Length: 366
Image (tube, rainbow, N blue to C red):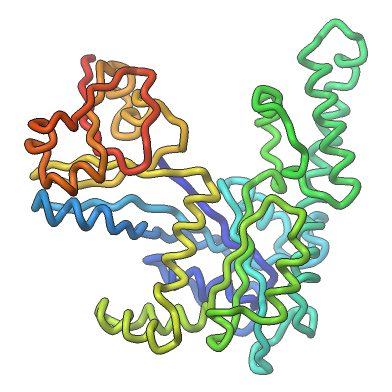
């Protein structure tokens, strides 16, 4: 399944530097606003030690990890909701993403100018939040004007429900709150899914710090934590410049040695990818054979036929059953044959809810 995260933030907060670390693409990183004019799309290979362990046991011809798409979107400025700067382009690009990675500058450096002349990540956050909220308010009010008459006649219950939801959104947005703060029943949420509200997307705030603050953060980070205490949002501390240095090292051993020297057990990029997975409610199942060991991404709570459809739509249409081995059983016993012999392979039907780490084999007929 394709997943796309948009990296957003004010100009010169470290978006493109972090994007370069994350992806196989290289965006221009320069000390001036809007160095990223068009959205740059890169691909992250998702690190997973379980994939490596399975490969050691199966010895496949190839190993295929799962991936995530990252979009580096042009820097936003105050007034973007009204088309200032590259506002319209920014808002159109972010609307297409599944989640927002909001980069906040939490470091001092006189050599890198700030678009507002001073370092204040809470202010920066509020600038972008406000622009997204204003655009969402415009979207909501436009929809209200279309459904209000139907809702008020009293004959169309669905229109009335949609109208009530829209009013809740409008109230929150007018109060300077994001759409994600409005708690809705899942069925009600589906009724307004086509709004594609910017502030309803899952968000993770990434505090870009200097190397000295990579482990314990700093005062800027603490201010951000305090400002999002009432939000349903993730926060991650990353030193983008340090991550860029790590990315330049050629071997795994060199990278690990560098991390140890700066007091980190793993790279910020690895932590970010795992956090993005959690943000989007995603999990991984595996297929394991001599030709290929592969990781597949699915949404938590999906049943076996849906997960089969990730491989091919025919697998879902003609689903018969799934043969499932738990990761721990496979790695403990060492092979599929050993798991079968020990009775550790389960045959599951259409109602089986796939679990993170399951090793799957699907039977289907079309």
